[in-house]
Image (cartoon, rainbow, N blue to C red; front, side, top):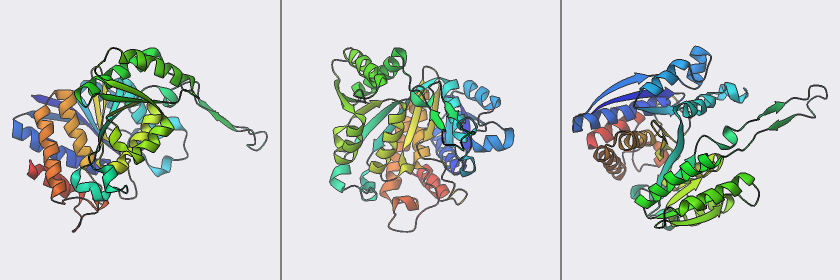
Length: 358
């Protein structure tokens, strides 16, 4: 195959981890006889600095022209007090919307060699293998009306802000159906996470998910309140197979899941639609260590593996990358966040180690 991939390194450590992932991609594609065409674009704070926009039109055009997009990270502290529409993260939200990717897949796996890296007790973490399927284009992050009303007449005493959570049957049914399909391929258990005792959106969510569940009689469906799920993720994470939830709940729960893997730097993610795929590590831009060549690139490398599998159907190639990552972890060739017994490796050294393990 000839793969057309857009690279969006983004902000902070994004460029470093993306570079390591590309090295592994190139080694994999060469091993299996494929070719690749890369294009590169701007997004996030870097894009704001150079174009004034978190998502330039040129980047969106390149994303729609590519077969798949591999992204690093977005976010810079200097934009923390700017309006949401002018922040780096807006670029990512708009990219997801423009690519029409509505399902975010976040696998959480406890690698045997990293059991000691998790702050949870070993017996809780050992054997954890779950998949969080998060709805990506609805809910509070995209709902309107939204805004801030500033009370300038009374010195800010009356300031208020508002956001709208909004979900349609179509949005719920398409993400639910995808989650059930993944559960059918795994251990056939799906946990739908919601909050219907408080939110009308969750009442519709539970009704639609239950209806879709009838189409998958071989998959066991359970409903769970989001606060209960957050608690069970640290008390008994092995009980979960596939977790299905809405946008904001999924954002929070998937970061909590990073604790199980030992480091947020370990988690890859895939955002899928009907036609396009966007792949990125779960971690942020980590500006405090940017440029120091010490960030963990395994989440980005795992995202590259997911891209090969989901966007190109290259299952063997993806499995080869994951097997190489396992070898590197077993050998202790890891960055400082994974608490190596010896000297920690740099970002680029881990990328090289994975490439050599292929």
